[in-house]
Figure 1 (cartoon, rainbow, N blue to C red):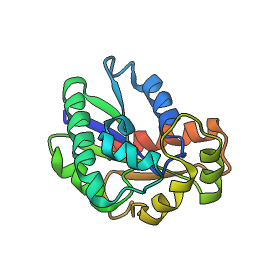
Figure 2: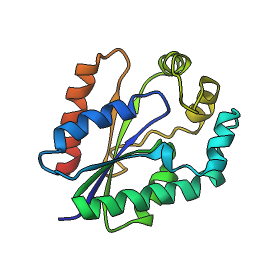
Figure 3: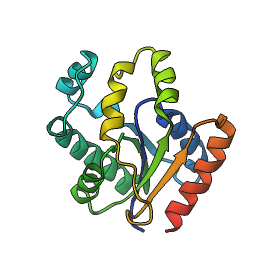
Figure 4: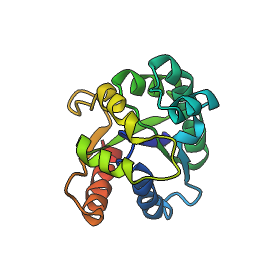
Amino acid sequence: MVPKVLVLAGTAGTGKSSVAAILLKHYTEDYPELEFLEGDLLHPESNVLKMKEGIPLQDDDRWDWLRQVSKQSSESAQKHGLCIVTCSSLKKKYRELIRTTSPEANFYFLFLYAQKAVILQRLESREGHFMKANMMQSQFRDLELPNCAEESHCKIVHVDGKNFDQVEKEVLKDVQELFSS
C-alpha cells in the first residue's frame, strides 16, 4: 500500500491543529503509530523571526520549509502508513513541490477555509503563536484554493458559520472520500 500523507491546509486560524486532533483520534485504531507533524515547527528560525516581526514570507522563504514538510511527513507515512501534517500549502506550486519532493507517498490536501473577517477575529484572540492578525492579508493574497476537479486529491471544507461538530462530520466524510479516490 502506498503511504498516505494528509495535509491539513489553509490560512492561519482555520483550525488545522484542532482538526488534526480529531483525525488522530479517528485513525489511530487503523494506524496505531500514526504521527502528527505541526508544519509550523518545521520552519527555519529565519522564517519564524520574520513572522514574529510581521514580515510576510515570500516564495523564496518557503521552498526549503515546504521540502522539509514533504520529506518528514513522507518518512513518517512510510514507517506508519499514514501521517497527518499541518501546512498552509497556500499556492498550487507549493502543493506541487510537496508532491514532487516525495513521490513515494500520496499527498492528500484537505483545505480548511473561512472568510477573512472570521480569520481576523480568531487571530486577534490567539495567544502564543507567531502568526499574528496583521499577517492575514498576505496569506489571503497568496491563497490559491485548489480547483478540486483539476487538482487531484484535494477537498475544501468551508468552516464559516459551522460549529465544531459540523466541521468534524464534514472533515471525516471528506477524508474518507479523499482516501477512496
